[in-house]
Amino acid sequence: MMGERLVMQESLFYEFRLEDHVPSDHLLRRVDRFVDCSGLRQHLAGYYSTTGRPAIDPELMIRMLLIGYCLGIRSERRLCEEVHLNLAYRWFCRLGLEGKVPDHSTFSKNRHGRFRECDLFRHLFEAVVQRCLDEGLVGGEGFAVDASLIQADANKQRSLAGSDWAALDHKQEAPRAVREYLATLDEAAWGAATDVEPKFVSPSDPAAQWTGAMRGPAFFAYADNYLIDLKSAVIVDVEASRAVRQAEVGAARTMLERTAERFDLKPERLAADSAYGSAEMLHWLVDEQKITPHVPVIDKSERQDGTFSRSDFTYDPETDTYTCPEGKTLTTSGTVVNEGTTRLYRGSTFDCGPCHLKEQCCPNTPARKIPRSIYEHAREAARALAGTPAYERSRQGRKRIEMLFAHLKRILKMGRLRLRGPCGAQDEFLLAATAQNLRKLAKLVTSPGPQVMLPV
Image 1 (tube, rainbow, N blue to C red):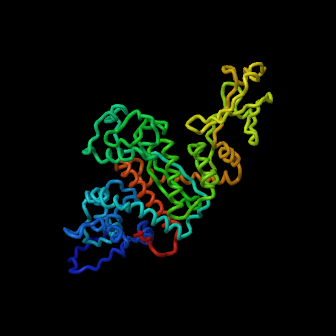
Image 2 (image 1 turned 120 degrees about the horizontal axis):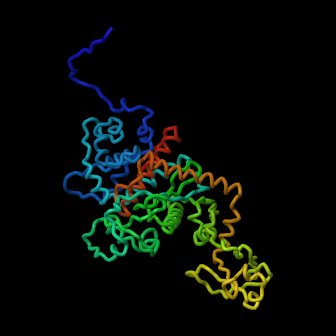
Image 3 (image 1 turned 180 degrees about the vertical axis):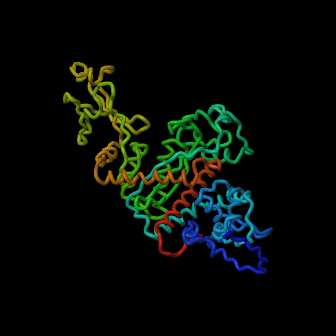
């Protein structure tokens, strides 16, 4: 029979606990045991005034930001609405039923002020990495590095030609993103990464690089650089840079050095794609850092016109000479060219002129010249590793970093940035990497343990 809804008088008192209404398998409940912001106030104490009205609790803002980045809520205005309505979000933020949610504008004021001044997001990220270390999720033997392009909050229709933007008078009253970019012109990850003038520049975000690297319509973008441990794909460092190869390689070196300094982690091997296979980078890995490079070598020595390539000549390290297919010797004067990175080995015109193989060797020059990098021994060391079982394992493991980027864009909705400027991109990348590591902890660590303490 059809039931009838009974309209009853409301109770005078209610007993309601948020704890009872958050499912035990909810993502935020599993993440919550790894987050403890009790040291946050002490860390920020020097950036708050001792007089005036009480400010918004920084722990509340950090917990709200973690919700947004863990669950892909990109808009801070929408995040405030969701925290106001969702019981699980209120529980994670320690708000209770009657707690007031701060206005969305509060995030911008704190992010551009005290949070950035004390590098809070970097501290939060490293505290989570330390927890991953404590839980045994980081092996420390094999790392992988890669970069992914993230679209910037910049409009092509409002862009200027690179030469036109450079000619503008950028005064102190310029937008924040412009001032941040001008302050980074000498940094290897930004202005000093390349002296090539960009084709287009966005006046609202000049640090964003105009790029067509995705084999589609060109767009303004930043490079999100990840350094991960291959054991459980934990992100051990993250860095924002311009979307050019030189800046990405420089960011990889910065991340490796910082990881060694902060966590005393130095991998035995590093896996990367061919973008990191330059002679200078391989020299830095092999000779200076003593890290085995599982990296394809950038090699442009093979000729496509049918003439002899450098591989057709034999190098003798004892005499520092090359021998051609006819048995003649090519020597070097020691002169270094190409910004001090290459030596030239020359044959004799008396040998090359009458040689019957001249048309196959040097048809357009009197004698053959062979360039050799001063870091060629590092390149040879990297070539010798290609195809080994360890190299193949690293190559397979490197796919995990690509999966992290796919998760970042598809699940966490980070296909396009909301913040502008180098600092804005860095803040977003740090929070997103923190969220990914927290989700990793929630998935792999089942037993309860001490919470992540924000370092003071």
